[in-house]
Image (cartoon, rainbow, N blue to C red; front, side):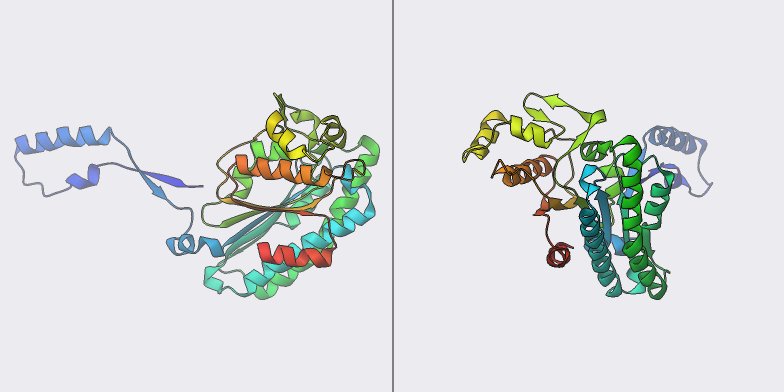
Length: 309
C-alpha cells in the first residue's frame, strides 16, 4: 500500500519580511495559485533500503481449499506436510538474513471464511511476521511448532463442520476477484501465493458464465465439455473455453499450485486440461511466474517448494 503525501507551495515563499507591499501582494497571488494544485509524492510503505532488496523480503500466502477434497484423511496428511515444508523453507530463508534486514511474513487464508470461529483463530496463529527487532532464536521454533500442529486441527474442524452442513465449496475465483491484491501483494516484498487445491473450482455464490468461459469447473462440467480426444487443446482454443479472468494486474504475484488431480479415469487428458485451464487463467490475470504441480508424495514436493521459494 503506497502512502501519498500532499505537498503545497507554502514553504517555497518563506523569506525575509523586508519586502514591499507590492511584492508581497504579487507573492500572495502566486502562492494562492500554487496551493490550488496538489502535488502527489509517492512514498513507499517501507524503508528505501528494504525496497531496494524487495526480492529478498518474502511474503508467502497459503490459500487452502477446504472443500470436499479434504474428506479423505490422507489428503489432510498430504496438505499438512506441504504446509510444513513451506514453513521450513520460509525459516531457512529467515536464518540467512541479518536481523536489521528482516521484513518477511507468512500466513494462511481460506475463501469463504469458515463459520466456525475456532478455525479463524487457528489461522491467526499461523500469521507470522519477521521484522527488525524480532528474535529469530525465539520465533523460528514457534513458527515450526505452529505449522506442524495447527493445519491438521483446521482440517479436522472443517471436516466436522461439513458433517452438519456440508462443504460450501472453496471460492478460489472469488478470492482472486475480491482479496488477492489486498491480502497477498505488498510493494516492498516478493509476493508468493501457494494454493493447495485439486484444481477444480466451485462456489454457489460465484457461478458466472461469459460465452464459453466460466468462474467454475467441476468434474461433471469437464465431462460435459466432451474434450475426451487427442485434439482437446485445439478445441479449447477454438471454443474459447477457460476460466473468466477474475482480476488483472497481478504481475507482482508469483503462484505455486500444489495438488492438482483430475480423478477422472474416463478421460486420459483430464489432468492436462485442468492444468491448461489454470495456466491460461493465471496468464490472463498477469501472473508471470507460476508452477502447477499434481499431487505427489510430500518428500518429492519438498524440492519443488524449495526451488520455487
